Length: 288
Image (cartoon, rainbow, N blue to C red; front, side, top):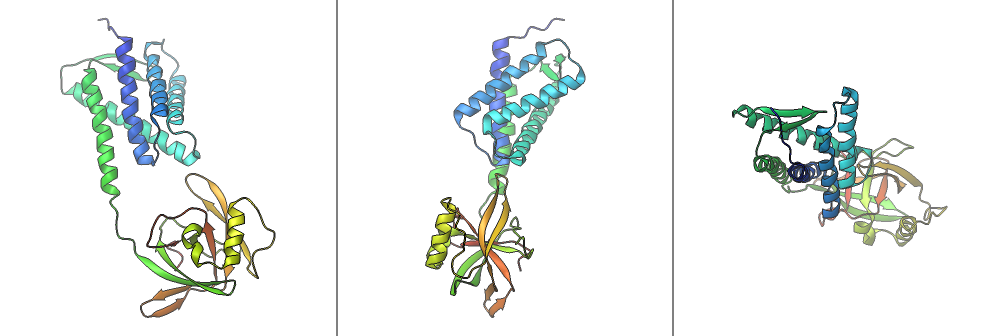
């Protein structure tokens, strides 16, 4: 039995499938791509499907080709934002491909359709292109619904924090962030992370001036007043950086029963806003 493959249909179907699966991979990895990047990545994915028509390659070469094309497609769609986010997107993109293949195979097994052609880890099934696109849409829609259901806003519990900088007592509202594990590299104690834009109005003038110059790219030699400067390593999914901070004698927790001293620690300042009216600072679970 001979198989007739129409290249225009093959490329168009794979282009649309890649678009759906990239949307799904971006949703779960927290990345969004513009239409131009999505089109370029989907076109690259469609062209990579032509390996089906090539002579059979050695198995290691097939694996390398599949992994390389998946990485290039994800890179074309979302760009480079650090190895962790890149690998996460590649893994999800590959996982959704496998999930789609499973749905297609299930459809084949439930019918009298026979496997038509395989080659170089690519499978061509005698299945309606419309049905294949519907299955891709189901994968994408399912992921979108799950991410929306899992991102329902919840009430953020905050706590009052009190500390002193340059002789001024500062009161802040802080929220618990389970992913915040900043440490003072000198004392190894947990650090209170403060948004400079959100807390700017509560800081002493000399501290604000120092932080303004710091975030503008000017590195002053001496910190303001008698403050002890700390450079706090901060690692996120997007980047690694050093945040300016200061050692403080004590950070106090304000409770309904009074003020509770938490001991000696440090405070670090982030250049971006936390986009919340409820708090200006974050602390990790090991802070208290």
